[in-house]
Every structure is written in structure tokens, then in C-alpha cells.
Length: 264
Image (cartoon, rainbow, N blue to C red; front, side):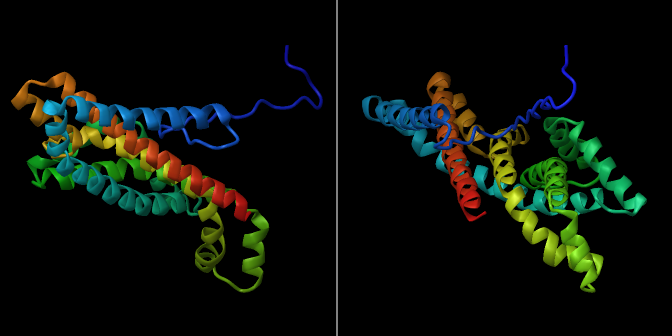
């Protein structure tokens, strides 16, 4: 039975698609991160050393795929930041038309799986405009993650006290000047950690672009496995490489969060 009066409200539960961010104050997670990272590196080294065929051959076959994975991921995250900023500003706009368009974009895109968006842009729209598979992959992931970035930007801007806006306007700043010179610089500190989380999530989702014949890490692994029939060995190595990359990125995001907290 819920209690009335001054009872505390339950905390809001937030789950991210990105990796868990290791912090020293969370001993269990920080220890788990170290065990996972050292374990993954150790397994890769042991497999390559004790069984160079096929594991060392697999390692030599995958660098091109790792490069493409990072290229697609970085290009997508940069474009999604642009889409997210525009849509986020639209979400807080007092103009009902702009607000409605931005809200519609967020709701529609977040309601369609990324895989479907990849198929739609490459195959469905390809009937009218033929673009390279890699370009289609970047466009699809940018549009998809732009919708999530929009909510991050909206929440970050909403977190800035209203007095900041009122003070800037009282000094004669226009609405756009207030947003550019006062609100956004302060919101950056708030949105950086969740943006880092989205970067990790996008890196993992980039494995979906292999279905468009983009030669990313997973696609290169599939090509090696289809030639050698070493499916277990190949996908074991691919999974370990993804794990190591994700763990490194989650650690960097954790360091960034700690630095922001120390500066506040």
C-alpha cells in the first residue's frame, strides 16, 4: 500500500543500449570490467599462440573490417549528432509546426527497427536512387540514432535552469543567441556521457550493415568462415574483438564522466 505524505518517490530506472560504464565507486562493475577485458585479451593471445592456424590467419584477415566498422560508426555518430541537435531544438521549439515535425520524426524513427530502416533505404529507396551500400548504411544509422540523440539534446537543454535563459534575454540576447552562447555550452557537459553510450551502442549495431555487403568486421569474418568453414573459430574471434573494442570505449566514457564530475 503506497504511503502518503513525505514518502520518497521511486527513482526513475534508465537502461541504455550501450555498454555498462565502469566506475571506481561501483566496485562490482569495475572489477567485472577488468576481468572481462583482461580475460578477452588473454584468450585472444592464447588462441593465436597455441593455435595459429586458423586463429592467427583470422586475425590477419580482419583489420580491413575493423577499419570499415570504425569508419561507418564515426561517420554515423557525427551525422546523428547533427540530426539530433536539429530535432532536439525542434522538440523544445515554441513553434507548433516545428515542434510537431521534430516530434513526429522522433516517434516514427524510434518505432522502426534499425534493420528495417537499412533494408528500406538500400532496397526500397534503391528502386529510385541507387547509392553505395556503405553510404546507405551511414544514412540509415544516422537517421535512426539521430532520433535518440534528439531526446538526449532535449533532456540536456531542459536540465539548464530557466533563469539562465531569462538572464540572457534580459541582457538583450535573441533566442538564437541565447541558445548558441548560453544554453548549448552548458548542456554539453550533461549530454556527453549519454552520447558516449550511444556511440558504443551504434558500434555494436553497425554489425547489421554486413547484410548490405558492407565489408565491416562481421562481414569479413563471414567471408573467412565461408571460405575455410572454420565457423566456430572465426565467430569466436569476431566476438572477442567486438568485446575488447566495446570495453575500451566504455572505459573511455567512464573516464569522461569522472572528469566532468570533477570539474563541476
